[in-house]
Every structure is written in C-alpha cells, then in structure tokens.
Image (cartoon, rainbow, N blue to C red; front, side, top):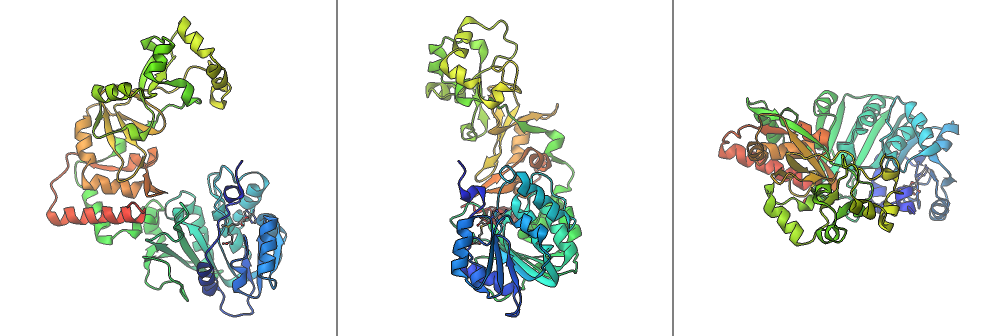
Length: 484
Ligand SMILES: C[S@@+](CC[C@H](N)C(=O)[O-])C[C@H]1O[C@@H](n2cnc3c(N)ncnc32)[C@H](O)[C@@H]1O
C-alpha cells in the first residue's frame, strides 16, 4: 500500500525555508496569506493572518494546534478553491509532488479545471504541484505575490512549459532560485524556490538565480540571469541549460553547427527493449534451462540491466562470463516456435508458469507466453547513468529488456566510429544538456532525448582551451545533478 508520503506528497519544509518564503511575499501584517497544502502548518506559524488547507485531517489538526490564529480547513484544495470567492494578498507553501500515476480521479479533474482558469493546459502526465501553483495563483488579488518550494523538474519537465507560460502571463516577475547543494538533502527530489510577484501583470522574462546553498533571505536573490521566453523556447523550454556557464554553452552551440556533427536521430534510433510481464519466469539461469532441458533455439542471451553493460562491447567472452556465473540471462523466446516442444510445454505448465500467465501484461497478450518486441540491436545505450551514458556494441547479437535502450544504426554507420564520437567532450556535454537528472546523481536519457544528442563524425581535434572549457562545463552539469 502506498503511504501518505507518496500518496499525498507529504514531506515537510524546514522552518527557515518556510520563514524565508513567507517573508518574500508578505509585506505587511494585515495581509491574508494562503497555504494551499499546509500540512503541519509550517508556513501558517509564520504569519498571523493565515489561511491553510490540507486534505489530511491529522495534519490539519496539528496545523490548528501550532497556529491557533490561522483558519485551517480540512479537505481537497481544488474543491475548496472552486467554491471560494475570497481573494488573497499572498500565498506560500510547498505543494505536494504527486506523480501523475497517483494523482487521479476527481481531484485531478478538479485540478485541471482550476488550472485552465488561468489558461494553463496540462496534459495527463503533469505532476500535481504544477496545478497547485496555477490554481493558487487564480485565488490572488491583483498585485499579490506567491512563493513556493518547487521540484527542480521545473527546469526540464515537459509540463513546466504550460506552467511557466501561465505564470509569465499573469505575474510581472517570475523568479526561480536553484541551489547547487540540495535544498533538502534527505529527499531524492531536488528542489528550487519560485517567487512570482505582482499578479495581474505579465512578463517576457524568467529570472534565474543560482546559489551554492540555502541561506535565510529577506528577498529573492538579486543576482539573476534574465532569460527571455524566446531563448527559453529555443532551449526546448528547459531552464537547466541556463545553469551552465554561458561561455561553455556558446562553444557547444558553435561546435554543434560544424560540418560532420550529426544528431543521434540521423545515425540511428534508440528505442526501448522488450517487456516480459513476468521477468523471473521468462529469464532463466543456464542451470535452470538445463534442468528443464529447454532446447537452445527457444533461448536468447539478453541484457536485463544496465549494470551488465561493461566497457565498449558485449561479445562472446562477456556472454561466457554471465553463463559461468549462472546469471539469469536466458530469455525464453517463443515467437514463431510452433508446435511448442514438449519440454517447453512442461515449463509453461509449472506453478511458476501458472502464476506468470496471471500477470497483467501476460493476460493481455495472445498467446501469453510469446514476449513481444524481442529485437537484436546493433548496440545498447544505458538510459540511467552515473557519470555518463554508455554506448556498448552488441557483438554477441544479444537481445535486451527495457532496462536499457536498444540502438539500431542506420545503414552505412559503423558502431566503432559512433562509439568514438560518443566519447568526445562535445557528445558528453550534449548528453548532459539533452538528458535530465533523475535524483541520486543519475542522468536519464529518454529515447526522444537520445535522438537530439550531437555526435561529431569524426571528432574534430580541439584546442586545449576549448577542450578544457567543454570539460569544465560537463563537470558543472554533473555537479548540478549532484553526481559526486
Ligand atoms: C509537501 S507537503 C507540504 C506541507 C507543508 N506545507 C510543509 O511544507 O511543511 C504537501 C501537503 O499537501 C497535502 N495535500 C495533498 N493533496 C492535497 C489536496 N488535494 N488538497 C490539499 N492538500 C493536499 C498533503 O497532505 C501534504 O500535507
């Protein structure tokens, strides 16, 4: 069962962060402050004329005890917002970060309707917090400000686009502060602070401040990069790349224009590998395959995890190593196998087979035991990576699960040349720019992001200065995703 931390996005703001955000938005004691997801009341204790709401009754009760002067409602913020006529002078808080998978049902529908009031059209993949912010803005008086803790995803998620556009249409100042050291070290989610001032105005600029660590502040940091909506749009609506040193990014763009530099989508395609629906059943160890006397032609050696990808290539020697360690790397691949050999039928009829056929994915396909999309790629690409994504040649003609990307090269491209280009600083920086951080220092490269990665074919020699600049920009990008 999912606990309230995940289901309701409950993690609580340290008092000094809450105090800072309230200070940013409340300019006189008479103002009415709203916290749309007040939890234990950390923001409500900072201001006498405060109104809070939380869907969790226990939290709302604690908030009432901690801030007896505040008006604390228990219930769904979006339902409450829909019925409300009052408008607020300020808002501050820390909205719940509930992934779209869990943010469902009526609450989600109401959230969509509230967000649409300010013209923000989110698709179904938006996390809850973005809609909380837009719905809160719609409850402000003209001239009011709001300040929130936001996930650093605001710097790259697709749904940040409608959010930031809506904020820029309705506030004169939209200001983000990013921190090199994590704002909440115990949380895997990286967080920034958002301050929007003067509701009713509009702006064509996003202001971005970068700080090493959080310190209590009277006002949002003044030292900012001013990013026009146009340049944000040209950067794919991703603010993250504006965190990097300007010179390094300018050099990257200049080098990316050079003849011979190709997009990954020009040289091939990175797609997802197969999904079995019952991994333990469909993947056997060599000793298990022997035990069931499964014929060789129904087994394919597979890459199940990114960790299997060593340096450079998966070849016969790599495969021999997996087999000698008795790793569960043999996929039961029954596409086109007719009639099923007796031994296979016996294996399908085992207790494990009976359980596997009940699995969601297996129940939905015919026949349940044929795993779809089993392909033999030219190479594998790790899609969750520490230092950098690895591109590994598939010399052993293995298959792969969706734990790695399956790379199919276009005709006339040679994997060795592509791998050489992949190691170049230009390409490594490109991965940092096109990919996105996943928490825990990891970089994630989705198929659509991999398609945009630039490869110099062949890598041009770089001056020492350019090489050093690209490398320091890569290090800075890794630092921003907290890769140690
Ligand atoms: C990230 S916590 C922040 C709590 C508090 N503002 C703080 O910063 O310490 C988010 C809060 O949102 C509440 N919440 C989740 N969904 C809600 C909804 N639909 N309406 C109101 N509150 C909700 C959760 O119960 C949780 O207390």
